[in-house]
Length: 267
Image (cartoon, rainbow, N blue to C red; front, side, top):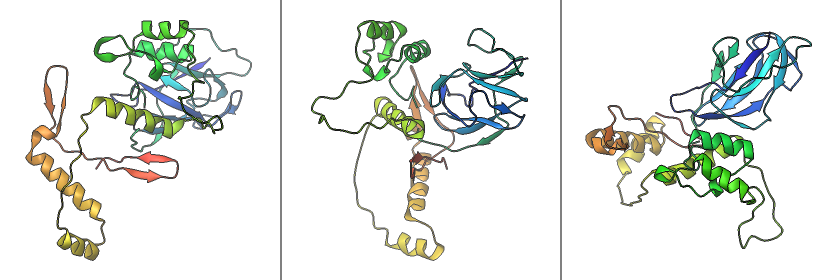
C-alpha cells in the first residue's frame, strides 16, 4: 500500500521547504534510510523512510514545495502511484523526520515577494517568478489573479536580463541555502525599518579581558545588545496589524559565514 510523503510543517511559521533528494526515483529503500533533505527558512532536516518500498518522486530535485503538498510515495514492488489530490491525510502519510540536523539560517520565500499561499502555489505551477509580478493585493501582496495576469501577458519570467548587463556573462542557478538566504534578506529589507548609526566606544578593558579568557569581542557586543534590549523593551518588539508585540525574552542571532552560505544561530 502506497505511503504518501508530504512536506512536513517543521515550525510555526514554515510555509514551504526546499527538497534535495538523497535517494533517486525508483530506488528500493529500507525503513529508516534517509530519502531526502528539507531546507526551510531556519532548519535543515533529513526525512527518513517510514517503511520499506520503492521511492517514487513527484517533484524535481531543488524544488520548493509548500507545506502539506505531496513530494512522493513509497510503493510496493510493481505498485503504481495513486492519482489523487495533493493535500495529505493523516493515514499512511510520512510527514515528519525521525532525526533532524537543525541549524538556523538567515534564510526563504515568503521571505521573498509578499504573496498569498495560493499565489505561491500557482506561481510554482506556472513557473512564474513572483519578484517580477506587480502586486495588487492588500498590503502589497501578490494574489493569484496577479500571477495569472502575469503568466497570460507572455512576460519572460526566467530569461530576462537586467538592462546594461554585458552580453558575455555567467549564469549560476541559485538554489538551496543561497536561495533561502537571498529571499530572506530581500523580505527583511521589505518588512523591517532600516537604520544605521555609528559611535565610538573605548574597549581597551574589554580587549584585555577577552584575551585573558579567550573569547572574541563579538561576545561582548552580543551581551551588551541583550542588556540594552532588556532595559528598553519597546526595542524588543514587532508591529502587528493593530498592535505592538513586546517579547518577554531576548533572543539575538549571530551571523556565521560558511563556504556556501550563511547560518544565523540564535543565542
